[in-house]
Amino acid sequence: MPKADFSIDEPSYQEGRAAFASGASIRSIVMQVQSSIGAGSFDEDKVLSSSIGFVDALLDHLRGINPPSKAV
Image (cartoon, rainbow, N blue to C red; front, side, top):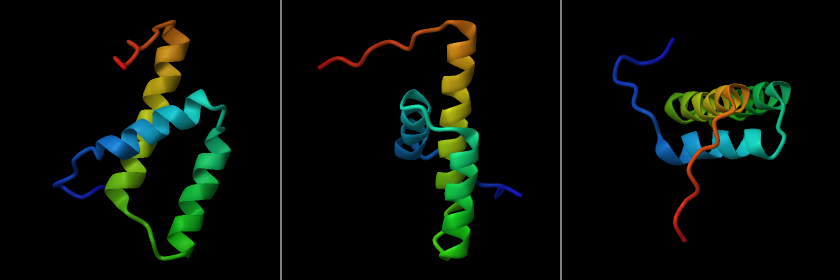
């Protein structure tokens, strides 16, 4: 269960969005979470933030929304 003081970790959120964009599957995300738990390096905020980013990117794709491109 998430901590009461959860806050989205922006770099992890963006990693989740990038994972979707690069073709990662939900299965691969779950396997990565299992691996981090097994290795004792599970950071709940980062894992949840990454998952939220992945799902947001999926929803944007399903809705046909193209996120704004970043200024270079």
